[in-house]
Length: 461
Ligand code: ARG
Image (cartoon, rainbow, N blue to C red; front, side, top):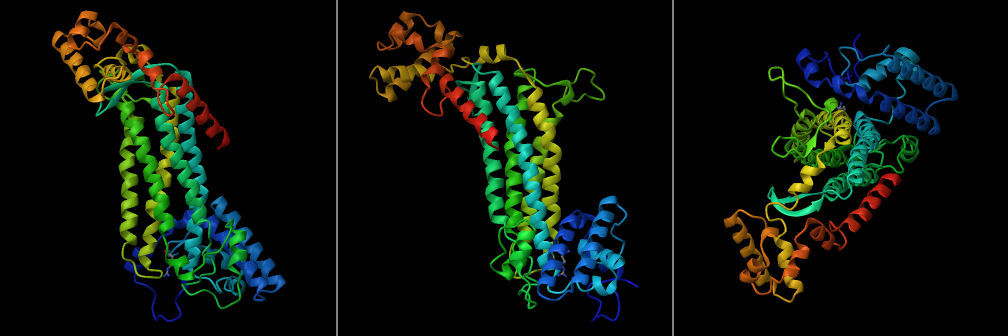
């Protein structure tokens, strides 16, 4: 006989087509450990409310222990006609503790409050895993920044040479973005830290069960304030999905640079063989597939978020079956990050930097023109004219095919009388870098402090 959770008022079982549509065990089975933990906590509040005897509680907990062991070993798996993880596990408990006892556990709870709670538990657990993996990427970036402290590179805006910066400054820019993603996971956790268990289908329970006790046992500091909100809200899932998407987008920005930097034209970095792939036809190829997959998977995570938000849009209160669509996108985001991030941190940690090439290119493309303008400002020239004068220097150099530092004292004087030979002091990468010494600037003293701050953040994490 088929074990359904809701057969009573129906004359026939569900059509095969409906059963196939309705079924979710192929993706919600991963919530089995959380479901069993929830059942244990629920059994205890049923007992506290006088709805189970000592023997019944003991029998139920023993049945749940056996069920948990069988789930873990793989001896118990969902059957073809189990609708979802909750249905399958109730069948499993009944098979182990008997129909009479197993049938008592469902009092005062609904799959609606169950699934909302279990989903939060699962996400809170994986937020810690994902956060740790993001910190591994940060650690790899910070280690590269430490190794290459002092190396200059061309800083870019619009992908054009802009001003020289330290490579460490550039790498740490990516590190700070990822550290904010880790902060977001922590902030999110504080909001997700409320248990809907006890909300029932939507209106709460009449059986005197204490939601706060269940919440505490399941690792939450509080129960939700409103049972309708508890069963209907999925902003916790959407927000988590946003943080995953944001993290993937931040990773994709590093990835894009890795792809560019590894080209012959840039030749800024060489990827380790262990994090590169070859071509099946071109024997010489060494491809940056880790970075490309990171770039590609960012699109997938953005899609997961967009899909989930679209499912939630305009859903009336309280629970609607649409909400069963909430899990796959978020699970996909987690699975994707958990497989991507270890490869990505390995790639960053092992890449080799061509420091000579970076240093050589740092001042090129007239990247020191701003330094001329700012030197003039320090001599009392208004920035508007200083910008014009520095621009004239660039025009002169461009027409003659030379660099700014190739201009003679006479050339400078002819372009503008304010350009005395002293301007040469700022026409070096070292001078340019050292002059940008306010907080957050690329001066070596500031970057050294910044590096320590990032290292301290990692040590605290
Ligand atoms: N499997 C459902 C979900 O993931 C929970 C079941 C609620 N079903 C119901 N008919 N109320 O959302």
